[in-house]
Amino acid sequence: MDVAEVLRERWDLKPLELEVLTGGMNSAAWLASTDEWRVVVKAVGPVDTAFEPGLELAARLDDAGIRTGRPRPSKHGRVVERVDGRQVAVLEYVDGVELSPADQAAIGDLLGRVHSAAALEAGELADWLQFLLPFEDCLDLEPWIRPAVEGAVADAVALGSVSWAWLHGDPAAEAFLRQADDSVALIDWGSAMRGPLLYDVASAVMYNGAPVVPAYLRRRPELADELERGLPTFLRVRYAVQAGYFAWRITNNILTGISTPAENLKGLTDARRSFGL
Image (cartoon, rainbow, N blue to C red):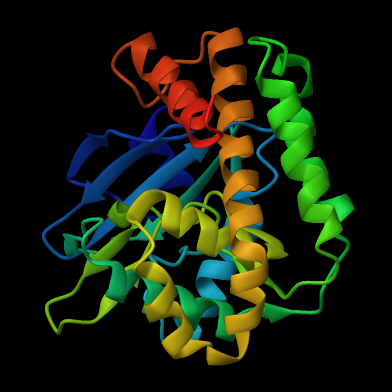
């Protein structure tokens, strides 16, 4: 894909510099700039159904005062353009210092703000958990995977009704950026989805540790009982997703975002250990 041409033809932007950005597990990205502006160009595959809703969520949250790296509409007013079989978006560049997993208070606090600003009516957990279905054919890669995934899903359904919101979907520390004014931005909305907020909290705990939870509850104290009841179950759900995802990557030899196949194996091994196996 000719990124400079796409920017000129679809967004009326003429960059002086283009830099490839690394690290995306499921996307390609470039930093485009002039002396006056910087944007991120992001491209994903044609079947990534979370991409456009995630960008729209980022725009809504930015309007609510949470800096997100919102999309810039194209000259046709679209947040996503289809180019050469890919979905392409242009995002505002967000500068800042990546948080580390030790910054649990800031991470939990901002996640609580996101869920408050993007609350939804509760949906059906059994239906939502079908987002594991794309990995179905890969769950027999190792004998422990299918029982672990199916057990986690059954336990989550047994919880009954839980609170829902629009979710970030992948709240690792590097998605949180400390700004010059000490506020925190949250970027990388490619995994956003509607769902139980317990899944986002469990993801944040998986990445950053349990001290995320007290900070989150300072924002959302009304959810204390729900987190006590449901968080252990959703930690298993989160690791079930990791198991399915890395089983899929290994089965299909997907190497985007990593240096060697060993990193896929590590992701699967980490998931297995979380189940005590």
